[in-house]
Image 1 (cartoon, each protein chain N blue to C red):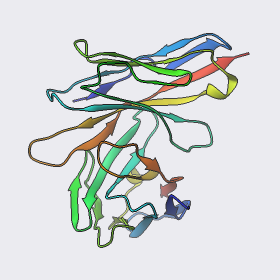
Image 2: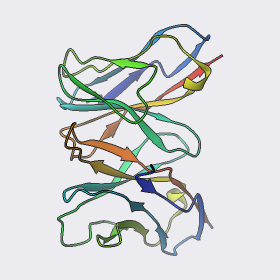
Image 3: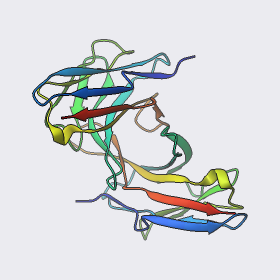
Length: 117
Length: 112
């Protein structure tokens, strides 16, 4: 079963506008973590932002913020003032806790973002 | 500081051949993991390790073996390559499971 859902395979945004990338997750754990990574066309994976399940405030890192709605199990990434360099694949990931094994980090299928000049 | 180093960057194998993808990190991270990336499927966890001598299976472990004899190295072995293993493989490390993962540059593998 898909633990992390990213329903937008592709998104377009005008330069300087804000964009929201959706992420919903499935877990029965009380303690978990959510990550967003960026993968430009060059292929490297770049960490953007992290939210712990017990964090009361939404995480922010520069132009990136995470809209965390725990009851809805969503962790949407908001990019403000989009730049051409933001064009990339974006992956939502979750640290999953299992009683019978160690914590592990799993990824969603990704959203391709294209910023239009 | 080299970070996470993966070798080789590219590899072509014939069906049935074996090979080892190398991964080394110099950050003294306990947690290391292997992912494969296929179009439309994101990154899928193959195996991971929480320290030397301790490994566990991820989402798609079949056809792959791992071992962790040192903190620095976490090789991924394909015992008998199959075309379904054609993919881009990423190794990642972090201080612990809850921390940010640092990724290698990836290995692009084609199995003919």
